[in-house]
Image (cartoon, rainbow, N blue to C red; front, side):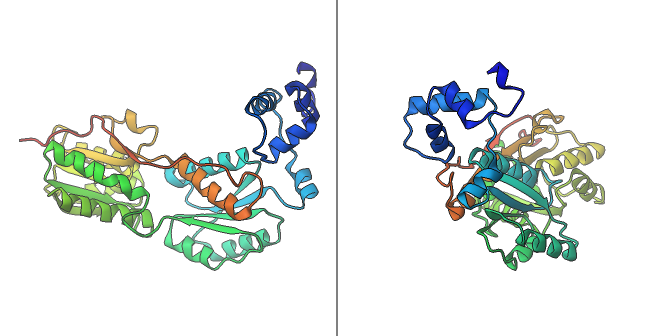
Length: 333
C-alpha cells in the first residue's frame, strides 16, 4: 500500500487490498446491497486505508448521469443553516455525490436570477434548495430546473421539527417555580422564529406561565443585547427564553449590565446547543438540535427524488433534547 501513495488509488488497487474482484468493488460503490457483510467490511477497510476517491466525472459519463448536487442556500453566517449544510454535504459524499454549495444573496434578486440561469445550464443530478426565510421560499417556488428539485424549508407550523422541544424548556422553568417569563424571538421572516414563538406561548399557557414580554432580535447576540439595553425598565420576568443560543448570550450580558445575576436573580435559556453554550458564564441551559441529522434527512429525501445510487441511504431522526446547565435556577423568593 505504501508504494501506491504517489498516485490516486484505483478500484483495482482496492480490490487487491481487500482480496476481492474489481467487479465486487464496483458493485459496492454503486450501492449494491447484496454483498456479504464480511466482504463489505474488507472493501470498506481497503477504501479507507487507500483513501480511495471515486472519479465522479468519469462515472457520470459512463452511466449517463451526473453525481453533482447543487445546494442553494443563504444565511450561512447563522449556526443552523451552516451546520445543516455540513451534515448534508457529509451525507451526499457518503452516498457517492458531491454537494456543490451555492450561497445566494437574498437582497440581490438579479444575482439570484443569474445564478439560477447558470445552474440551469449545468449537468447536475439534482438541485437542493435549503431555505430559511420567506424571501428565499418565494425565490425557490418560482425556480424551474430540468433535474429533480427538492426544496427544504421549515413548515410554518408550531408542530414543526424545531418547535417540538420547546415545551421541555418551558416545563423545566415551570418545575423550578417560574411563573413569569420573557421571550426573545428571532427574525420575523423565518418560519423557525414564528414556530418557536408560538411554541413558547402555547407551552407557557399549558403550564400556567405568563409571557409578560416578547422582545425581537435577528438571531445575533448583538440584537438581543440591544433589545434589552434599550428598555427603560425590564419586564417583570424571572426567566428569559431566547430563541437561540447567541441571543441568550447577548441577553445574559445585558442583564449583567443591569446589575442582575444569572441565575440567582433571573434565569436564561437558549435553543440549538452550539458548542460554546456549555462554556458561557454561566453554562447555558438550552435545547440541543442535531443539525447534522437534519442535513442527512434532507439529502436522503433528495436522493429519493434522484433515484440513483445511495437513494436507500438512511438518516438519523432529529430529536431535540433539553440540556440543563447552570443558567437556570428557582426564581428568587
